[in-house]
Length: 236
Image (cartoon, rainbow, N blue to C red):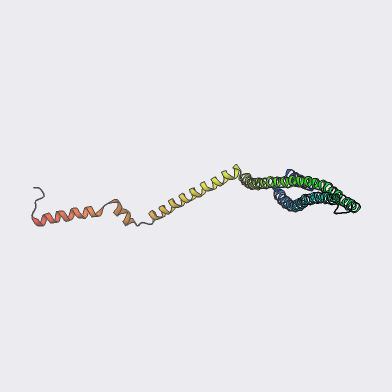
């Protein structure tokens, strides 16, 4: 069946595709599912048509059975009328024979229609199995498609991570750390140099005033002068 050949191709494509080309089996699986849905629609249409033929065959069997019984009843009524003298025997025989011929034709129609109905029932059963199988395969491949898409995401993420890890080896990491350490050392040395420049820019007076606190000396002189004015004796 074309369905199974198509499914085999889908499975074969998935098995033979490389990880970096996972988009191809995804597209093929999606196309396969669309084909299966198309096959499902066709099978459902065929199933409906054959079911209609089977139903019609059963209705025909009932009609032919009713006709056979009706002709049998007519033949009996005609013979009864002849027996009563209401109808000539020769005419009654002719009519009864025709009724029995019609009955036999109806019986043959019943036999033929029953054979057709059996074939229709067999075809209906086969198509119903095919429909169920297609539905099962659609569900299966839709589940496979979800798994396949998830595998693609994982494989891409893994590939990108491995690529980054491969590009960032230990030597480059050490070199980057050394450059950062040199940069910090350079900044620290620059800060110290600016501090030295700030200290060297001070005047000699600033350095002397820093060495000797002139404010304290001036305060001592002012105190002695104030005591002298008030008549304090320093020797007391």
